[in-house]
Length: 362
Image 1 (cartoon, rainbow, N blue to C red):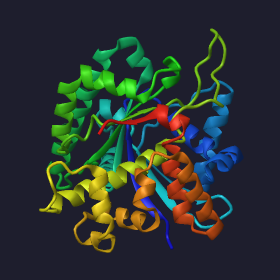
Image 2: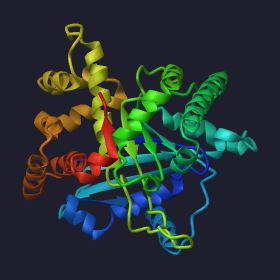
Image 3: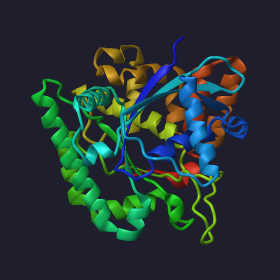
């Protein structure tokens, strides 16, 4: 059976840390220690891209940060359960270059690359907006407000520009707001702290951004802390590329966001839905009709019907890490690649790192 396809688009201004994040994301989840702890590993579908990412990471160990990407890059990663040969999930990662936020295309070739990139954005289940932790730490609320205003203006411009060429862009409806360089903040600082600050100090800008994306409450209820490497403690010392935060939680957050988005889409089509129905209540009801979900879910959300055939509602709704781990290990023994990887990802949101790095307020 082919792997489940998840599509994610990453946005961030130049210098926010997208290039380093991708290298750390790949390196962390290819290590034997990760496979032992989480019971799965990832592999780049394109071997050359995998080697390129590892090369970037190894240069980080020498204190050399890579240059930011100036082009639209697409990567594919397969997720394999421990001791099983079959890939269960494939993540398609679209990296929208920060330079495109700030400058016009330099020639016809770059304009065409931008057009093709925008078309791929419409396939994405989840979008990630990366806020620069260093700028947020030094500039505070003003930076976050600027980021939201700037991103809203850019999305509006992209929509108008693409519509003029007959290729109107479609943005993801589910979003995660992630703070990069989180190692610059105190150890007790968490994604819930970040959420509280943003919702308190930039609510008007959040509302504008949701309106531009044409997705009610697209932003404001999923937050992440991400740290690709640890900043040096002493002046003149090198960064610590062996210490990270949130990079192991990123794929699980994308998975859960995809399921949540699909459930909301399905709930919206059901006339009998009660006004106070929660996400998990809706998911419990829908599980009964999982075989017919494809009849009314938009195409990019039909993945949820496949996910729910392999992972029970209790595994998504439970807060018990031990239950998820038992489900994962049992699936590996049975050779059930899908349940093994999906339950392992759900567990990653409930361990200590996941609890600090990921927060959902609704």
